[in-house]
Image 1 (cartoon, helix red, strand yellow):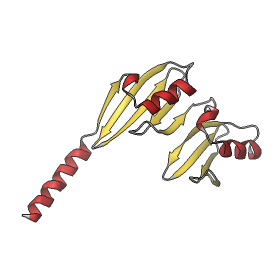
Image 2: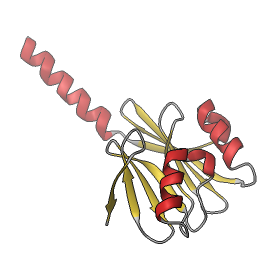
Image 3: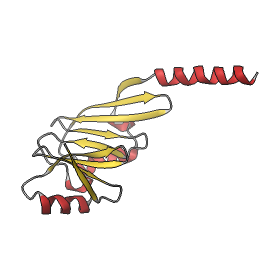
Image 4: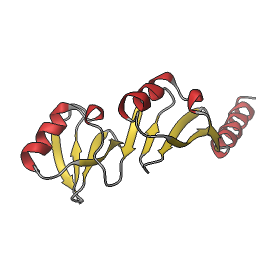
Length: 144
């Protein structure tokens, strides 16, 4: 009986994981924290689309702006990644310690992409360099 139960649970888990769905949603359907980020840091930019992706029990959101910027949020609306292409990421989205480090070491560069990847924060600069920071925003290395 125990083996049958475990087998059924395994099959259900595979079905849940295999059933990833994407759909376009309204901006009002984003979590409140994500809406606040957009209103605060991208007020002058209109939303091209909002995509919701559900995979099993986890949900993620992707917002594409008319300017071409792309912002990703987790299920609670916390910022995961922002890619502004050739424009700087809004200063308020990147911790001051990271800005200070980049201003000191790369005074002519700006952050065009910012986000968390594998428990590390990454800042891509407009000069092509990708810098890694720990969870306390201390510089770790340049990722080529």
